[in-house]
Length: 389
Image (cartoon, rainbow, N blue to C red; front, top):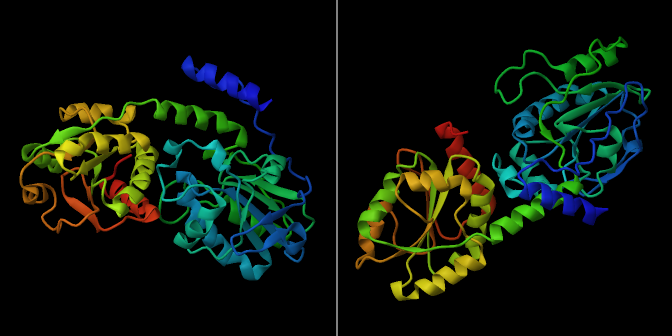
């Protein structure tokens, strides 16, 4: 069955059409249905079962993830609900329903974290979560059984453990600030008061649940990326100044590296990964090798191995600047001029990284090897600060 899905996916993608073999989404659990049993691992090292919440008057399950911008925006509100009701007999439980196998890199361009179990603790820490955070991305059995459509999708069960509310948290979407109407709070308050939930069903707007079967998309995306040509051009002092001016209007990451620099080579995959994640946004990534010009073939070969190609999504902005590549090797005679052109604070030590805003101003720099999560945090911050979609 899996091979059949993959065949349909490849044919449909090649034709530029929708994935013809998409299985239908599972139906949403009906109001009045009993809560399904479960046993899921959590970031605190425990395995939680339904019976662990037997004393709760209300059980609120929120199916969410780390990557979706709707889920990211709602994360602080989830903890707020947990704090507001934890002493009133309400158990609020977050569940990651997303499978990393069902995600292409460019779906990860709105946050610092992916949807793997290993990345969940950092996401929870970033959002000051104290509620249980469970992982259903391995089997997705519970998510499929309740019909979790998108992230976040809330399911609230009363003391009888029958479904009393399902849908979205509120109408805030990605807005910050006070929430005008919280369907979750209204439902919980009604259950605690022993009254009927006035709006038992709403739509759970957000990113669709990333089911495992979507892996065909990810494989095709990888094949397309590997097939791209990786190029490298010489960079003189005048061209370096233009890179700093950043006429593209994008958020720009520039990484200085060398083939003989072990930390440089070690961190390059993080940059390629970040570029693939953020390629759908107003973002670009540039590498500048400080190797001797005669070593250009060697440097190009390494970048080819990493698939450090130019994304089709960023080609228009590259062409706007009269460029044809995102990889360069410095061809000037004085490296001081390279530093003066792009970052006067750069000591010359490798690796070195800067993030430019659309005005060509440096908004973040890193001397030394970059840690992937921190790099992505800084890219998201730069995009948000610049108001870039």
